[in-house]
Length: 139
Image (cartoon, rainbow, N blue to C red; front, side, top):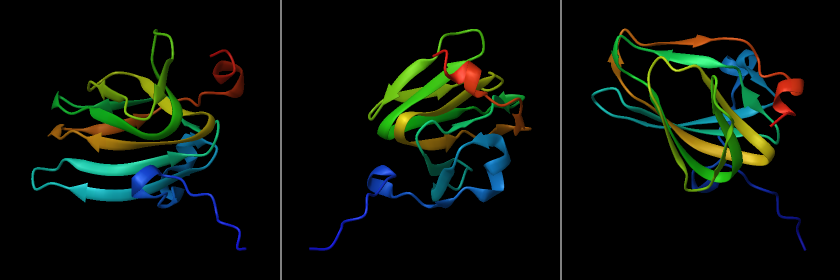
C-alpha cells in the first residue's frame, strides 16, 4: 500500500514556496496565484505551515484599497494593532481596511486563506516588524 502524502492549501492547493516575500514571514509560507480581474482585483491562496506568520504590515491607499481574507483550511490568527488577536477557521472572512496595521498567520496547524487585494489609488504595502515568538506565544 502506497503512503499518501499530506496535502495543504484547501481546494486550491499549496502552490510554490513564497520565496519573494520570505523575509516578511517567520516560518515557511506558500503562494498560489489564482486570478486577477480586469479592474485589478487579485486573488491568491496563501498557505502557512504551523506557527508561520507574516510581519506586521499596512496595505496603504489614498482611496479604496485594503484586503479581504477568506479562510479555506486549518486555523489561523488575525490581529490589528491595539486589538486582541482573532482566531480564524475555515469559512471565516476578514475585511481589512486600507491603512490598518495588522498581521495574520497559522495557529499550531497548517492554515490557508485566499487573499483578495482591493484596488485603490496609490496603493502599496508597508512591511514592518516581525511578530516575534514572545509576542506570538502570548496569544
